[in-house]
Image 1 (spheres, rainbow, N blue to C red):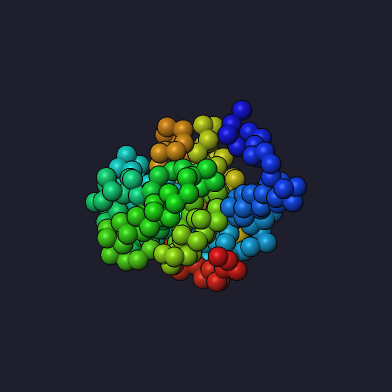
Image 2 (image 1 turned 90 degrees about the vertical axis):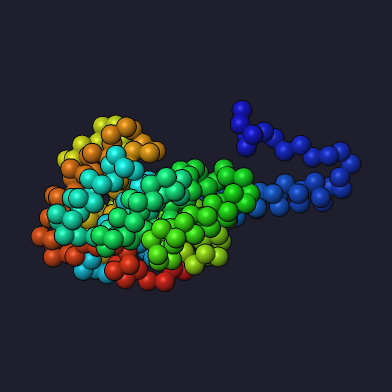
Amino acid sequence: MSRLALPLRLPPGLPPGLRFALPFGLACLALAHAGPAATWLPSVRRRVPALAGAGDPGHVALTFDDGPHPGSTPSFLDELGRLGCQATFFVLGELLERHQWLGRRIVAEGHELAVHGWRHGNALIAPPGRLTAEIGRTADLVRAVGGVRPAWYRPPYGALSLEALLAARMRGLRPVLWTVWGRDWEEAATPDSVLATVAAGLRGGATVLLHDSDHASVPGAWRSALDALPALVERCRLMGLRVGPLRDHGVPAPVFP
């Protein structure tokens, strides 16, 4: 049994009112902490379009998570250069710290760096204070490497918590998730499956989530996203849609945080 599943043990002798109020208060705190994570659900994201990244109906935002990694990210940069489009890279601080040259290349080639966190951990189970420190540390590193203060924050797994939202706001970061993804992290993913999964929800104003690294997925899974990229960009252009980073996407101001 996990710690979260253990029953709450109250000290003996508490007044009846407090014996009710204490568990109720703790439950409310837990709900406030984890409540924002409901935005991971597609039905909830549709009700918060700014958080989902819904933007300019003539544009598609192309975003990548979990890099930068020297074994994969350069291939994405090469392909994006060949296709003549730019993207937003949500980076992990621990990887950017080790591969700062790659972060500088991302910016030099016209792409956008954004904050994904220091490590690929779940915000809902992080000890109090860790997210605030790590989001700040990553934002500082992104600014030092890229020369520009980052504008966006996307939590690993799309798991937002109250602390993550508040920490992002303190750093001037706007939380953004996605409207459509490619499920490119799965072992069975192929270029065709990634393209089909994205195409099912692809429309003007979409924010597309792919991964330029297998740091938190099946080894080599990034290849399915890379090989799907030319067909994905071509499909957008045939639909009359421009493809680019979040900074050009016209995402409206969010309702929260």
